[in-house]
Length: 118
Image (tube, rainbow, N blue to C red):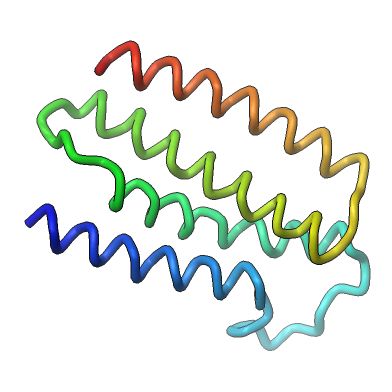
């Protein structure tokens, strides 16, 4: 079962990265011209990256607290990866940097909670 979850995690991770690089793949709406809005479109696909990371690296399915904290840690890490990808592809924006710093603080807090429970 653990092997199947890891394979599923790799598939979800690949889908998340491909949608982060090409966020308009399923959208019929016109592409936003502003780079800030484009980064925001990329960030929502970061949840798939985070869920894939969670399925790949998480192994202890006994405690629901550990599962929830691991899932939140993975989702936050995926969102950070998607935002950094947006920085590389769309440019650097100060408001996006503030979001990145907030997410990094949340990642540190969730990592502390996760490792404290483990």
